[in-house]
Image (cartoon, rainbow, N blue to C red; front, side, top):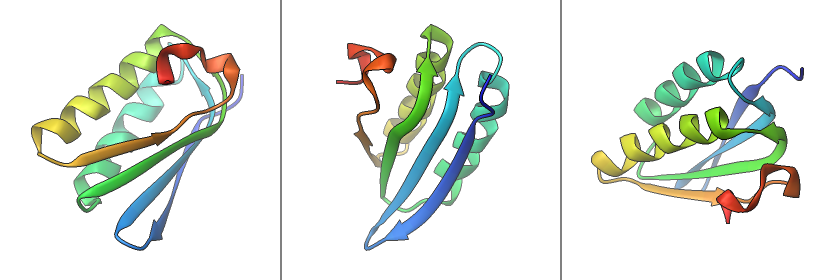
Length: 92
């Protein structure tokens, strides 16, 4: 299992969050608080870069959906960069 990580980089008016590792049932509890903290400290725009995600199952998608809902409730924008094909068509 590849340990998940979320690295952030400020770029113009956006905060780019680069996610790497696996997103699944085992890593969801690690990623949820990282996304929550990211959303709390980000500005209006967040770009989610999933190119470093090596595996994502339905639990990983659930983590992303929860983060997206949190952003939308706050009236903030959420963009994503699609990851590798191993993540499936759900990101497209």
